[in-house]
Figure 1: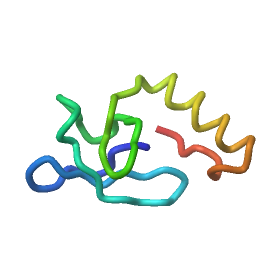
Figure 2 (figure 1 turned 90 degrees about the vertical axis):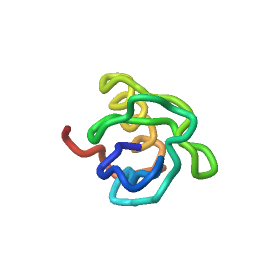
Figure 3 (figure 1 turned 60 degrees about the horizontal axis):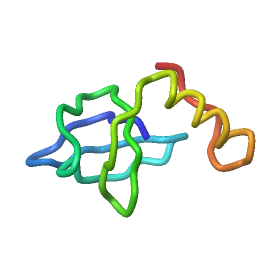
Length: 72
């Protein structure tokens, strides 16, 4: 998911295919708006580089998991 807004503390809003969620960044350092993260049960587990994130989102879209990825 892509980070679209940093919140108070270690919270952020992320988006994937128009689905937005509030998550915790407590387990990942140096996350900024525009970064992509792997998410599990409300926590960002790892940052992804943009190319890897795009490939992953394209695979999800092919299998019907998400809509087409948004342009960065």
